[in-house]
Length: 518
Image (cartoon, rainbow, N blue to C red; front, side, top):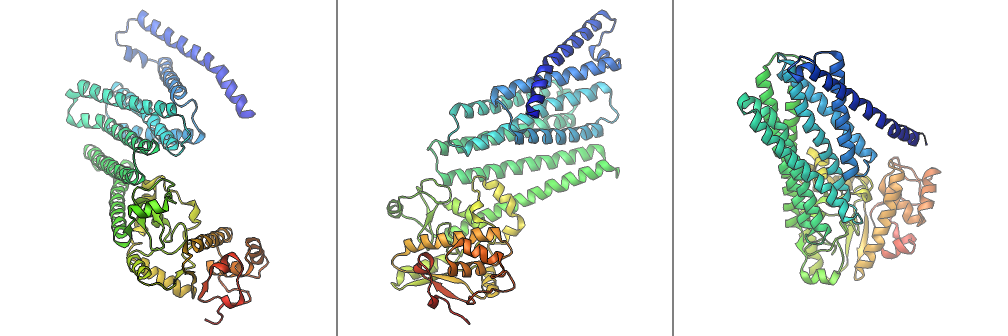
């Protein structure tokens, strides 16, 4: 209620503020025409009153244009978008103030104001580009958004791109005589803004193709990754050259500005190295998946007649895991980044070993026992919180640790088995698909309890859940101290390595299912 009253008071006072601003500006202009001054710019800076009117007029007209654009293309900014716009504006303003102070430390006031106005116009549209990018990303994940909503935001981005090109042409026309070095400083922000707008429009076009049923999820994922990678490398390289150029013009004087430039150079360089590492990791993961798992045939996909369990999209092509479940290749890559178990049945995914397991299953008619390493399930947190909509963001989160994940997976799994002292297996026979569903439900319950008690070992939770066959009972046992975490288990039997049958998961477990003393 208080927020609404503030909004109404602002709306009521805005016409008054606009009227006062316009009136004071008109009076100042008339005063300039009646004076003997010949230079309007010098007149605007001739007194404190004129400076205040000049700055207030710029703020008013900028705010008014921003409000018109907001209502025309967004109706209303979300709270997160407002916070992003504020943060970006503060960061951009501080950077440009330092930059202008370094480059124009001995310049005339006229030149200083012109540079600030130039960068202010570009920064104004950079904020709208950022908000439009966030809004389009939100629309891409919401299938029920009206088409005209997409068109309005895309039209705004197109307008920003046209403005950027127009601004660049003005720069080349007006400042070509100032020298190549100054021209590079002026066109830098135009170039950066153009790259960001084009990347946003390209990503939106890719997502819109999939949303319209024209493209496929696999092509969508790889195109988004490479567009983000290439745009990031180009922008980081341009920033490196820009900071080096500023340092060359400014010189090394061992001041605070040198520290800021050095930190900017180092941070940008680390960004380039990280992006290259993410690219190598991405390529290695795809090669590992290609070697480890067979492509699902057209007959197998027609027989399944199912969507990819990760992205919920139809599968024109897919990779088939040893357990028989099929997923998009690139969806599977994104999933393996977070969890090394099948999204459906929770069987472990071991890169480099899947072909042997698949061949063994096809060559024998006997039952095979697949073991679930207990600490692998939920080791990365709740796997149901996986988000596959933004592959580039996932790549940044992995960092150098995920770079080493492929090579050390087998060693980590072996260490997990030794540290836990045992794993739980599930017998797969002729009714494998039914068993998979029951096993998936069981591990889902284990993960839910694990999310409530993160300090509890997964093996301890699984052992008690197999005994009680009730999530509420297991939670009650943990709260009452009958089941302890890492120090031990107070249950009727200690758990070692024992098979879990479909009946033990779905219909109750017998005393013979436990093997004590192993």
